[in-house]
Length: 80
Image (tube, rainbow, N blue to C red):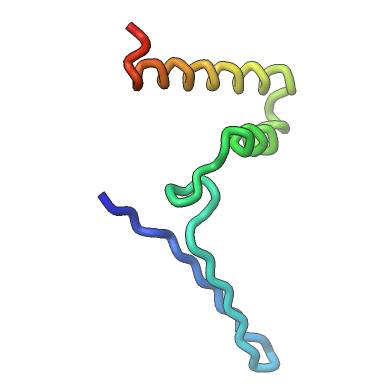
């Protein structure tokens, strides 16, 4: 299965007739640019800090990390 890269192009035309173009391919967290665990945790804190205190966020992160460890054990056949 091949994946299509997401490509974005923004074009701005200024009043003085200049044309400015910015193109971007892919995004952080996409298939071509997966996020590291540390970056996922950082983004989670940033997005959830208005809704959950630090203790709850830490517990949620730990729970997800534990689920990831269990999934790895199942995937490689270590868990029986």
